[in-house]
Image (tube, rainbow over all chains, first blue to last red; front, side, top):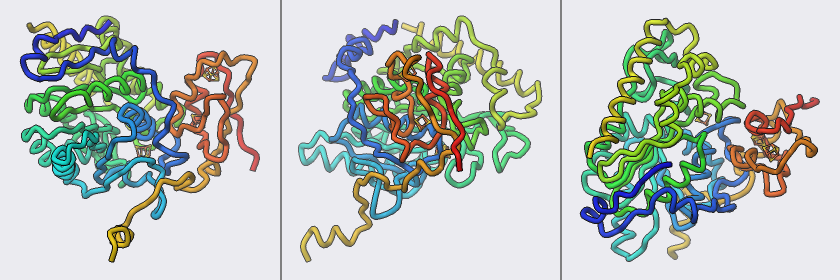
Length: 318
Length: 86
Ligand code: SF4
Ligand code: SF4
Ligand code: SF4
């Protein structure tokens, strides 16, 4: 089980004690309320809409979503209608965190506790939105930034992004990407926010709890959600949840939290650290890795081992 | 001009069911639940990206896109994806 009892550290840094995931288990009866109405125009089997369902269930109705250009700005439906039953502010690609900063300050000045949540894709986070995001984290903006990561520019036709992993084919890397995936979590960690976590659309209960927890902190928090995308990753639509689980089980995606700098690795990833499934099981169903050369697979495997060792060392550190 | 009228001039969309049309027409395969096998665990409803499975585990075929995640994740293999007749 995950042990989050670091109240002494928490107390020295913040007036708010954060509940542990177990405590949240008790209050985390996931509400029936749906804030994503039937239906968005998302592709069949889309993780973006699956993840958003649980982000909004956790946040509740007193929430404003700030959405930069990404699939989420497109799937809302056609003006004058929207499938999102919550206030949404659609904003330019690079501006989401800047907009959220102003919005959050205005709410707090007016004495309102309204949650301000940026819901952005990997392009709008790792590449185009990184400047505004870094600024907002540096200024200690009271908001939650959720990056749902489908590892490419989904709504413009699957161009490579900073989040595309090594070896993956996209429309702009037709022979496979030759660079590594940018480690945005390390970049966020360098801003020393009170709370950051990784999650996956394939583990909606875990995502729900992490969003609830993130919203208990004053200041900026970040959740990086792996969001498998059937047309982009070229697997058949029914495998979306399976794909997310394979990513975690192979160690390609690690579930962890970082609270006041202290890392806690999630139970599912602990299992993957002891007994990972072969990486090939994760790569094989995906067309974007078709024909990947064995040397690249080896490099990916080495990166997984290195990354897991790094996180384990951080978790073990006092 | 009232504040409301001013706001009307902005491009504001309002929450509406079916904002992207009846997405059920996209479907190639339709999920069919075998109630005999089903144990009401609710996992299909949890994982449906479009939230078209309700508490009674009824699937809203006006909107179900036929992705098949429900069938793939069902621990009892109680959902079968059946090709739609055109
Ligand atoms: S391209 Fe991918 S992320 Fe975008 S709507 Fe389609 S399935 Fe979802
Ligand atoms: S996942 Fe399968 S067993 Fe569980 S409620 Fe749905 S149909 Fe029934
Ligand atoms: S096929 Fe997909 S959209 Fe239809 S009910 Fe199953 S999970 Fe939901």
